[in-house]
Amino acid sequence: ITFTNIVRNCAVLKHFNWADEFISKYNGNLHPSERTSIVNYCQGMIEFEKGNYSKALKILSLLNLKWSNMKNDIKKIVIKCYYELGYFEELMLQIDSYRHFVNSYVTSAAHTTRGNKNFIKYISRLKDCRNSNEIIAAEALKTEVECSEYFYHKEWIVLKLDAIINKKSR
Image (cartoon, rainbow, N blue to C red):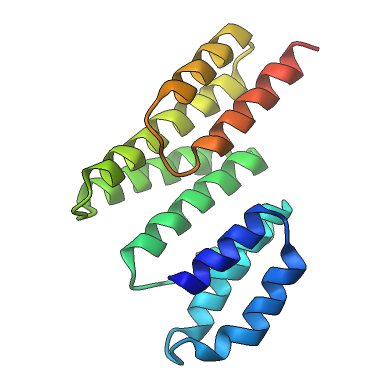
């Protein structure tokens, strides 16, 4: 988990070369049976952060990891890729699939379950705002998201709402 967290942090900070060097230097420390999957998972995160959404989708769609926390993260990144690419039918199907996953996902942390459900709620409403011409709805949703309890990818949703608001107010 530390390996993937280091790569995720580098990717989010746009330190792609450092992330690639880290993967090259330390992937030998990963268990041989999981090395390829974990490296591909990391590459998928990097490609998403680079804005290469189709490439990220291709990499992530091939993964079948046994760790539910990574499966959870992969599903969220795939949803974000579909949003970024404007593939709204696929997005809605993936959100529905993710909703079923969350409902069957066993976790001892109630805040994780709430966070996953908030992600589903807000990504669905974000898609609706992007497709509508109602800047007031986007602004209201942004305020609601900002005031909500923290959930993973909350900042991304706020950024996407900002983009909608700024694009429509020009």
